[in-house]
Length: 259
Figure (cartoon, rainbow, N blue to C red):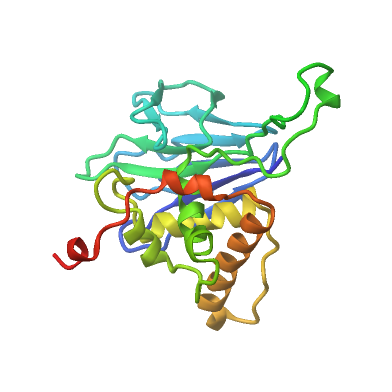
């Protein structure tokens, strides 16, 4: 089982932050100070110096709310409004969602939040017999949730191959955003969110080895290579199939695109 990925979007002109935790590792978050070291800094005066802690376990993650006054929300962006509240001083609250958004109270107009991708949720092979001990059961090699947004992104990346069989190139991130927008589609899906889902698929779900680069000049090439590797593996092992195309929103007609 993999660890967790924590992603803090850009805030106040600062760069985005991505942290990875293995089982048993922890990250403290808050405003921080010289005497209060933290690993995930949240620049907001309404956040405590030491606001909380995230700890990764084998199959989930835990959130400790170290604030004495404020409760925190953990939202499931995939769950149609599903969320749980972690009250002040609650230690080690287990979070069951595979993809979460942690929201802290703030004086800002937009909520202060960061994302957590949970440890890999493991599923029993649907073709395996029901009897026997847990140790004897067969697990799926690639355990993906077909109701999750990251899987929808994966289907959009694979769509040209499944429909045409001979596409010129893998869809770009903006093309995926455009494909998943419109009526009945996933609301508010940005290019940055799509890139995060692709990273999660490549690094955690499909476990594709990263391609090293000598410097940052080849960043675009590595991004394209990651998308191509994700699509190749998903099609090669039948992770995405033609029936999954039904998950995508209806394709816009040419006349509608020109409006």
